Length: 451
Length: 175
Image 1 (cartoon, each protein chain N blue to C red):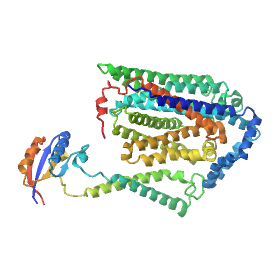
Image 2 (cartoon, rainbow over the protein chains, first blue to last red):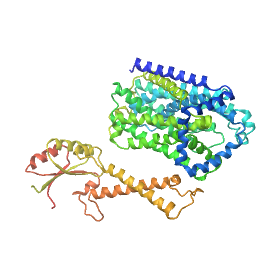
Image 3 (spheres, rainbow over the protein chains, first blue to last red):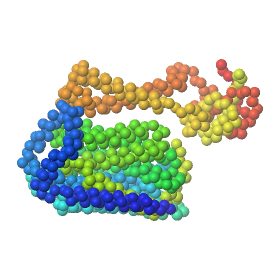
Image 4 (cartoon, one colour):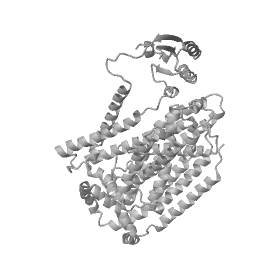
């Protein structure tokens, strides 16, 4: 049995406290009126930090000049009509900022556990022979699904009750003046939205609950009936998952930008959560191994996780590029604004994420031998995890705060808070059962697995 | 130099693998092993050096990428500038997204084809070449280990018999 080391527990609690303070600071310093917001932006331009901030867009102009000027024309047409309400808009963006920081981090860590749950279900449904030694690690990580999901749903509900304006379609005032959103109210309305969110989380949590129950029951069982039940519910869950995950990503992420849509968005978010989830499995496994647990996990298992990290990183890039290229090529104004905002206002995070999520992992993990070396997996893993945080950041921030983004106290605080909570819940769950799911019929194969 | 070779036939890849290990443990030099399919772990058991084809694959891929970039730059930008999706900016970098599929395909194409050609050259395979394998059964379901005899025929055959060979023949070397 694994015991939660005190050091790690204190570390997780410290992260939560520090993160909580950071978030509180973010909320306290958010402007409470239009005047305050104006004053804040004027201040920021006065001091040195303003220069730093404008460095990224300047770079953008240098590298994408002709393209950018063309984009400018499109963008300025858009911005012309809301010029009158500019200050009001700025105030909304700044007051959204701490909420968006909270939401990005909450969604990101929730997404990790959902990605791991999908990976786990695939192993179960495929009756994989290599991975049963990692089942308990995966089950530990999916323990975060329910609390993490509840936090996300609470934030969504708070948005529905107008504590923040992350989802502008939730504001009846906006919908009344916006025929495009008005046409979508059949789907994008608060009651249906919350019912969907509730159904999704219930479905995922039920699968998680029963598969964990059968997995624990299999440990002491004399036959493999629990294993078979797990196989069946996993196959059924995967069908439920791919439908609900897609709708979830439209609801919880894409609808922040209610005018814009992409038909492969569900896949894109899936790729992101899948690669992050696999990476976190590898990181937790290597951590536990370094502490002398999981002695039955050998470097061939790490190698396979490394292959998945490598492969799904490329898969993510493929989807990212498929989405980007079609929109870039067709250049339809209502679609292309999505990428123009990101390239102009978010140049560094937007292209930086591509380096972190594609170029770095592909170069580091390409060599077969490196995938067996823990150091390389950890290094690539940390970059992938941070890169996909940036991915979620890029999905949510541009529509929530516009060009007023900054990775400051609130953003880092949000990340640290949920990281602490994630570690705390995951490692608490790991103590509740033996780290070897010894009853699994494929355990022998998995323990002897070698490449 | 002896001009006799022992051919030991096996009918199971696991038996073959353990036989190869015992033969090498007894300090006999294995000339070659003929198998109908790649046997997992045989290269390690034989003590073969790691393949370097992965390094070549990477280099070939880079060549393919470079060829694609040069080619598209010449065709679409320099020689006959093209209007790409309503973006006639006459710059490779700004039209790069349109070229990514080609860059990707050429990378894969070069890596795959040159890798196969390299493999054939390294394995000394070419069209109409006379087959080297001494026993046609090795193209079906049997495994053959070839060992040159150095005045130790008796010891060798008894070792091979013990290791699970189903048939042992001593033949003159063909050249």
